[in-house]
Length: 183
Image 1 (cartoon, rainbow, N blue to C red):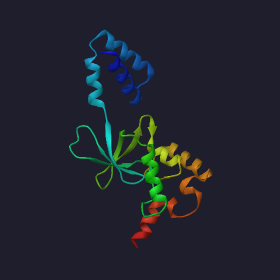
Image 2: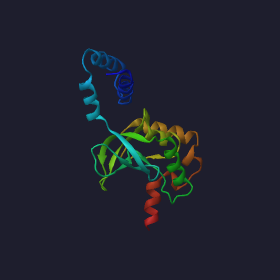
Image 3: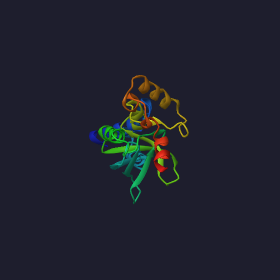
Image 4: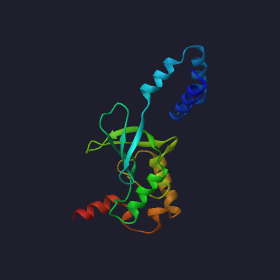
């Protein structure tokens, strides 16, 4: 394994949230052997997906390894205003576009009734779902969210009057807006 491969390997391990001592152990082990077993391990466990489209503030289309068709992903725990909820919907989408990279990692949690993956989406070490809430671009979907850090981030955004919390209205509860717009 050459120096460039070693640096790439270290970055991949770090992005996959391996503890530092494990990274060091694996790097040392790669020097002792050919390192091919380690590259094989990483390539089979990689879930790095190419971003094809950011549809709105909480839905993406990705091309993931081993998947012949693009994958639709609904971001776990959050609900953003619909695009028709101007200006809130486009602001949520545009904020997500501004913080997302060309590739992301997806931690799948469930599938929704439309067959989409529901998961946490990471760009490097940044949890994009949580970033949308912290920026005030998304509300926490209490019915589906089991992680307390999302509620805490939402409270902080509300206190700071960020994004959707800057004024009252249905942009704060997109699920209510959808119910009313069906009537």
